[in-house]
Length: 161
Image (cartoon, rainbow, N blue to C red; front, top):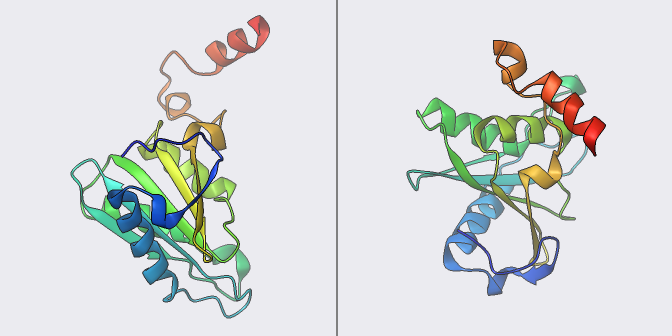
């Protein structure tokens, strides 16, 4: 799934490797199912798991805006609800090629710390980044389990750097 391009370079979807084109196509297709009566901003996402399965989702808005759910989270939650726990790639498509929101970034990092994230627009342009680049200082599960390697390590790293 590794893409031979520098992070944040823009590339035509047509020039992507087949497995990325397949993921983007799934995201584009499901984007049409988005329920976006308030913003009109339709988003589709597709994830590939370590077992090779693909799950996809679209954004679902709600009149109570806080209850709106992004496409990325829908796709990840569908994978998890089917027993998948390792996400190896994510593609997200919107009209403008908007990056995932902060909530989606936190959900992504829960299942894939080094996952490539491909962001595409509806004009056929894409860029790739990583979840680590999108969310360099996540809220780690270790903070909840009392494991070492949490707050003190982050403070130490900050003091050194």
